[in-house]
Image (cartoon, rainbow, N blue to C red; front, side, top):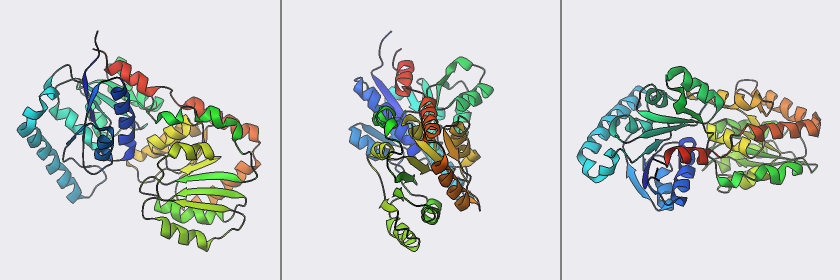
Length: 370
């Protein structure tokens, strides 16, 4: 048995696919393994590759499901173009065809490239409870050697469509190592002050719904210290909305984008957020108490099922976005103030216990040794 010398990371698009790939790229680099990243120019992956000082290969793929007919046509043409691209440029990627050089795909439309254009061993890391179309396609064939599942429900889903259950591995979702010690460091600091500290996360692009609804909700509750991440270029509009609903007994801080996100998780008593797989995993890894509001138009309603994992374990709250969202949020926040603190701490402990520990080590051990 020997350690691989090189690996390809195939990931692009949204942060939910890209940031787990970044954690794994850092893991392989720390073990002195060469990493090459394959992705698009649409997401943060190219910048991440530059920061890691690794080679980046751009492919012209784009998403398909949930898009307009015109966008679907563009995506199909891009897929064909990717095939031509690799045929023309294959001499520069000779190691892609070597059987000993593995590739890990991290779901999403970019993973199509693994299905058609790579001959080495292919692995898949699927973050969501309900896998995407490309992940299902990959796993339904023999193309993927092993699948690393972010949640138990993900594993159960794949086992239903795969005849080789031993290749379906419950790994958990990789998150930044900065999260690993947060729960132990902060579990006794929960609700220590008169003010309830609330962190609102709308994602890098922000959430228009949360930016509009939360100021109205928080106006009805007193003694709050709120840090609201509203998304790039959304701070002015969010500030105007908060000014319409001024509550002098609350402190409000508006932030467009957060780099050191783990510090904010450590600060917060409550996290109000969407339910992308990475966000749910970060909430759980940090032992935070989350109020999840799934994106209602997420494909296959996967965000709902991501959050349901914690809700069903008495490890978080789940609210669906509908006409009752404002009143439902007010009720839950008022209820939290009435719940005995020991019961809330049990919920935080359940959240932490739900996170599957050391996913990057599990994935590394399966992929790096040949």
